[in-house]
Amino acid sequence: MIIYIASFLKLLFLYLTFIHTLCARPVSYVGGWTFMTYNNYDSNSALLHYSPKSKYSIGYKSEYWQKKEYFLNSINLNYLIKRINKKRSQANIYVKSGLGIISSDYANYENKNEVAGHLEISTDWETRRYFVSYLSKAIKSESIDNTYIQRARFGIAPYIADYGKLHTWIMCALKHMPENEDTITPEVILRLFKSTNLMEIGLDKKKNLAFNFIKRF
Image 1 (cartoon, one colour):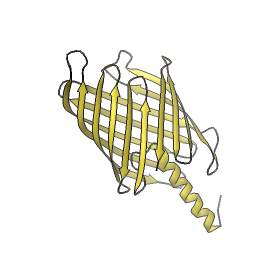
Image 2 (cartoon, helix red, strand yellow):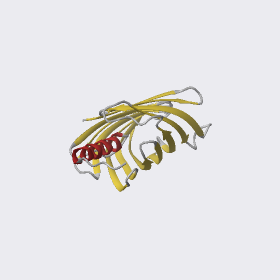
Image 3 (spheres, one colour):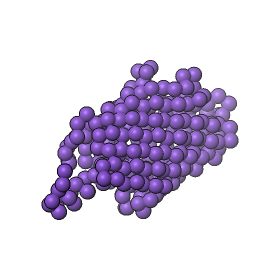
Image 4 (tube, helix red, strand yellow):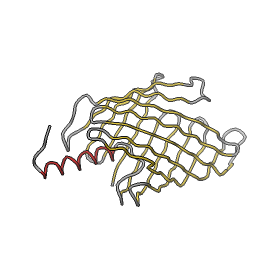
């Protein structure tokens, strides 16, 4: 469809840029703040980050792993390696890193504190109808934890919403953690977003709930 009105072209460009920026991006627009919280059967986390440039963001993350009973508090640096903008799609590659302190009183780790780091590489591709993403993440400390996680998602929008309306995605996800008894866990996720708010509700095969929320400022 060819749009002849310049003002509408500008509005459409801003709309598409906003949609791609909101969807769980680890780097926001210049000067933008983002709050993210992720909660599932494995862990609960909260991240606040600021983007001084369009290529990177700096933030603070607090994460609690339930079964392992430890907190990981870290300073995070997220970097946009590559962004590919097409007429009807966008693709991104990110590297996300963090360094901080892991604290545990689980088993033999009574009140133990260690330096810990985490590194994540993620990529995504999306149109207004389809969404695909993949991430690979490792958490490493001297003795408390050594975890590796992979996650993949495929989503589809059942309808194409106009600017300012409620947008909906239905997603299927797979999580791979080699240390778990069930190494691969499927999940169904409902994603809703409007304005600068994004919410996800998920349910895995064991009927464990997940809740994620993102807010741009």
